[in-house]
Image 1 (spheres, rainbow, N blue to C red):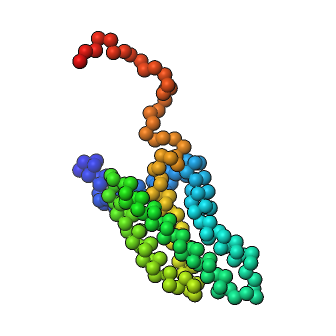
Image 2 (image 1 turned 30 degrees about the vertical axis):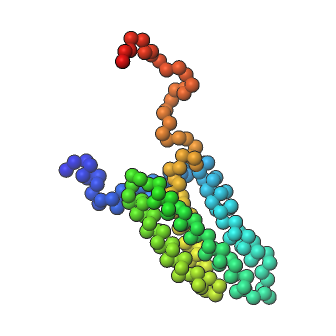
Image 3 (image 1 turned 90 degrees about the horizontal axis):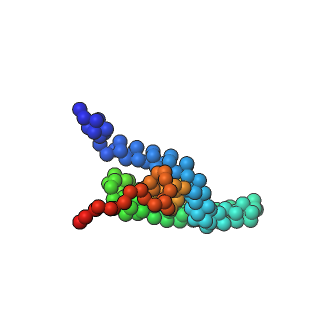
Length: 181
């Protein structure tokens, strides 16, 4: 058996899980990535949720109807995760030209997100399980965004494609004397 054959045992499933694990762990070593994720995706992207949570915690009193105050919080959660997961899944589909299994992963989660959003949206006003499912789906949506952007050069502290060592502004050694066409 060749090394390539041994490496490929298990098919593309092994490669998919390996890539997902790699993309889940590697961005933690880039401060820029983590800070962007927290500030832009969680804080600013989830601003609707944070406003509704603040409103619920500050303005909801035990004497008010709890269902009415929880309704807006549920709606904010249920509208957050499909937007985030949908955009991240489509990013995987369009950006991954070399790894078809990641593209398929993106399509799978896009379909699952759509089904979950449609299943719990009618229950958004009166069903407390919709809030729990919305929270869990939001965590998955955040992970999918993380996976989709794990290799975005704009978010990484170093450019993985840049040459290592040397001064990029220095003159190159050697010359073209004696070179003819």
